Image (cartoon, rainbow, N blue to C red; front, top):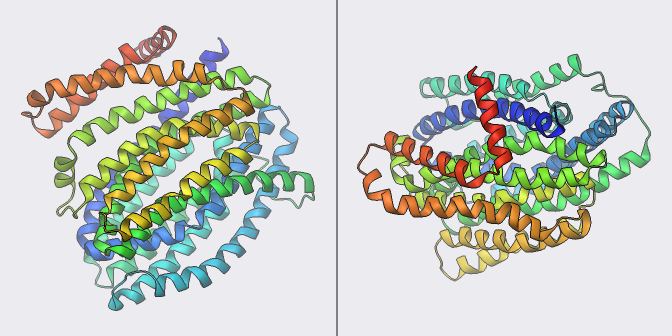
Length: 505
């Protein structure tokens, strides 16, 4: 069996587990948002969303160390050096303990002041907002301390663990949605504490699994200053990119709150929730691919890494395109069925955000390949500066009286512009060929995209006469057929057909 077939089968298997996880999560999320929005009301739901956004501003600290832990664990596995795995795990665990102290300090000073003095929250809901804030911080700290265990599961490519845990997570969240209307206490406070219990339960399951099945998931006090310094350097440059990304998303959420009201935060939050459910499909795919990219680079197979990077770019774009098309074409109908009351601006917010995500999904493998090399300084500085421009530019336009959608159009423009420096940096650091990238990725995805645009423009009048379920089914089926026939190479088609025949047998 060739390395191509072995790697692709492993990626396909892990992606399947992660997709199962995502399907369960998305189904529960869509249902619970409908119930929770109805129980809490648009104002309280908006408060919960914006408070959660404040806490997630601190996630750039945890996210950077998470990617560092995954990268260094996968790198040692690629070098076949299992003796260093315990060192990497222990050093990352020690670092997370330090981060907890930093986050507690920042959240209970600057964060608490911002919530109580800067956000637009009705006076009678300020106490509940503070309760939500403290619950969100506790949830975040539990998640933070468990990240080394999550990273170990990803590096070991045991994606089935996430699928199984999602069943428990989904069941608990469904229970919350069913019970919340019958609880006589403040619904916003109860919802916050119950969500903390769910998050803590799932994270502790990951800890138990790793300690039982992975020998290296044991904390030991190693004084490896070189490893500590390398991980902190990698995480430090990642931190800049993560902070810029958080500010780009939640910064816009805060700007909307400052210039408008919590109801628009609810619209923005709903749009983000739907978009996150969609992008998580591609994120799950990249989660399965990322360890392979690092292991290929660590093993000295740079060409294999680049080929997998190009291939994963196209696959992720196709996966997202199949889901995005029916939602973009039927946004109003889907939201009206899903929600009892659709907040104003939700439809436009969702369409712009989905289109931006479809463009941005192409850039993820570029970042993953650079992270595999460990040389991320120039990349993170350049992309972060571009992303951070989003906030001041959006602020200026809102001050001039433009509508809230303008901030999302600005965000999309920056995403498109950032692709040019991304490619140039990858060319200089890992030897990426811009011509090959344009030919193997951009040109190939453009062919099915153009065909799909022409097809749905021609058939829209016919398709629109069917009910919503039939319409979505036809749109997704036609998308899959066109993408398969025009978007894959001959080798890829043969591999897919072979796997399908084996599954049918």
